Image 1: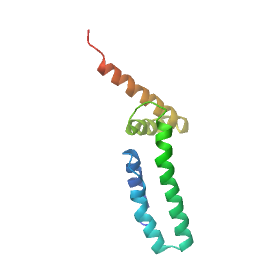
Image 2: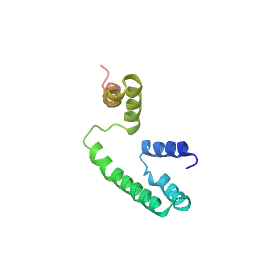
Image 3: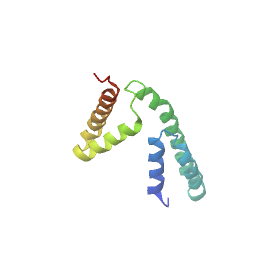
Image 4: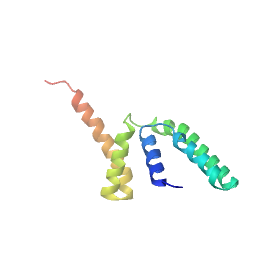
Length: 113
């Protein structure tokens, strides 16, 4: 696939702004149908549709239980935590950054005395 890095970046951006990834995967599925065997194209199409459906159903279900923090804050915390501490930081960084975000909002909204 030519420009695979660019396609991956587009999917990442769509995921951060919470748009369906099928917007990018649709043209890729068409490309795979024209350039690859039918079996691999069908398998890729089914896989992409399953990923899109699971993203549409699982993301609200899993994120609905947590705090109302924007996805970008969680993403920045996860990337920063991963850079600082590796795999463990991927999870801990997102939690700490989301907690810091909520505390910052509370601090901004408190009454001055």
